[in-house]
Image (cartoon, rainbow, N blue to C red):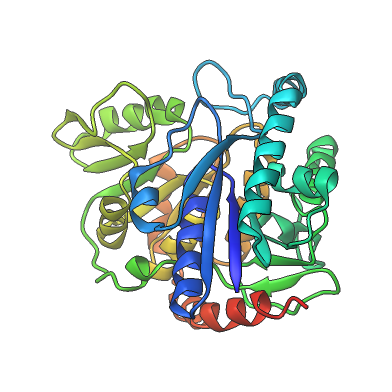
Length: 358
C-alpha cells in the first residue's frame, strides 16, 4: 500500500512517531510516498528527521501555538487570533497539499495531529482514507481523568481533536497502558523507535532535561546554582547558540540530537521534561523516574501529565524543580516490565489497523 504522512512539527514527539511508523511500514513492504511537516518560524526541523526518513519531505505552513516573550507559556487567545489572521496562508498550504496528494495518489493519509490535515479533509474531501494518530485522542476514552477546572481549555482540546481527526476513517489513540477499544477509538501502543529499544540501560549520576520552550532554562540554572555538583544535560532548540553549549562543567545545553538524547536517557539518574507524550514513554521503557512540567497554558500537556502519572511514569509539577525529582526517586515504582510487554505489540497492531481500511 501507499501512504502519505502529515506530521505536526511542534516539539519532538510527533516527529519520532513518524520515524517509527515509517520504519514499520517499509519493513513490511509498504511505501511512504511523501512526508508533509507543519512548520512555523519558532521551530527548525531537526537533522535527524531528514536522516531517518528516506521519502521526500516538504514543509508547509500550518496552525500552531504562540508563546510569551520568554518562550515559556502558551498564549491561547493570541494563538487563535494569529491563526485566524493567517487563514489565507493555510489555504495556500491546503491547495499545495491537494496538488501533492493528487500527484502521489496515496491509499491512506496518516495524520500525526496536524490541524492542516483535518482542514484538508474539511475543505477538499480527498479520496484517500484518513487515519488520525495521536495520544491527544485518548481524552475521549471513558477511563481518562481530566485535570480539574479549565472548562474553556477542555472544550478547546476536544474541538482541536475533532479538527485534527476530521474525516478520519480510523482514530488510533497512542496509550501508556493497554486498554479496551471504544466505538470510536482504537487503542495502540506508543511508537518507540528501534534505537530506544536497543539501548543498554544504566544509572549514572546525571539528570536529563528536555524543554520544548527554551525559557525554562532559567529554572534549571537556579537549581544548578544550589547543586553545582550534580551534572545536568539539557536539550532545547534555542536559535543562535552552538550545537553544544557548556554553561560550566556540570551544566550542558544541547541542540536537539536524537542519538545523543537517547544515549543520555539510557544512562541518566532521572528525567525532567515538559509533558509531551513520546519522551515520557521512552523514559518508562528504560525505567527512568520522571518529573513532568506541563507548558503553562498548554492544556493538552496537563492532560498528558495526569495520564502519565496514573500510568506510573512519574509525577508532575508546575515548574522545573529538580529538587522535587530528587525527593521522588527513592519512592519511584518501576513499571518497565508491563510497559515493555505493551510495546511489543506495536508492529502487529499498527500493520493490522493500517492495512485494513476498506
